[in-house]
Length: 532
Image (tube, rainbow, N blue to C red; front, top):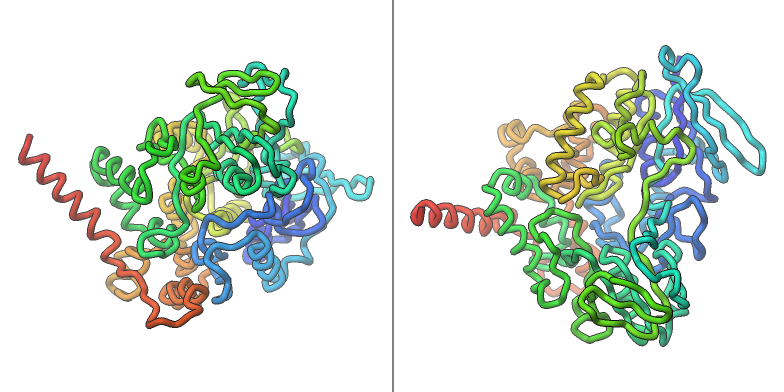
């Protein structure tokens, strides 16, 4: 019999999961609480409880060639970094092209997911949904959770003494939509992540004064990288990853800090992270340094305490007459429709094998898609996660023993502590993670084989950007157009910017981007050997 799969959420991860189910002959049913597909990227002018929320000015941080579904490139004329409405247009086009809409039930809330009494034998789930006040239950052979991790705002009021005395407005960035109502106001933004920096920069054009408070600082990167190319097309490469993971730590750390400081010296702007060598996710903001230079945004350390009208910072300085405090303090992971112990099976922390499968389940029939974070884009990550998850659900791929899965989780937590400073973070190394998943289903490209059989493609795959097409070159779901898409990706990058022809568009030299770090590394090692 064809296995029935319940998919919770019709955002990017949900659509990827529907498509993966169809590719493997499974029968998906997707339940979406909202009125449309798109999840996080479906803008609404008001925040809705239980749904992700974005502000109108949100643009993508990943370029279009690194963001697309691996067999569905963006149109040539789409901008490299897209407004949320443009990405939503693409998501809708993908769903229509792949005929996914017929499998989605809109305005349908999943209220509970419970193991069937015979779960240890069948692996089946009872899924209860609610629509128009009516509840229904159905039996599914598997469940794929695709509801995202930007749904439940984390607002740590207990960490800020005196906040209960503050008489101004106080809310989470989840509720922020546009800057108009803040004209002439004095605003404190707490948090130096992407949302905090975006909101502070935007408000600085209309508010009287904006202060950003940061506990630990952050690297701030521009979307425009060396030579004017999109940052991720130059930064996320297999060779760059090889160097980072294999050079001596002192050289790797030095080179990383140098890259982060290439645009401006973070210590001069009060932005320098407490531990600059950690690979914590940087902030992408093209405007913040300029707003700091212009004096419309000021960066301060953590808030020590609040009074009725002001904030006192840890350095003793005070921001008086505050009208509003916006907490850009991230989100909590929660899945209210299932037993919390399934996802957080140890010490109340998220415990998932490869960020997808709960190890303790007797049958591997539940998968969490999209609960990872990296420098790579969400779409190709969710696509590869769902392809592997479906293979496991179908029985084509098998999982290791519970003991081996837990050991792998512990090993990865140790590496995360080294790279990101936190063992329980959902951050991961993009290319390493993608290759690991791809190897499970036979979709990881063999670089050596490519150099022997297709040197032109091999050079682009290894030294060029690790674009999503690479993971549809071989294996299940192989796309015949993947090779051509890789070889023409720079044409699509240049198309929307070369609207005034002043010569032939210049593509980057693949070797130039890595020659300098290699030369510096070699010289550093040589100097070290000579001196010591």
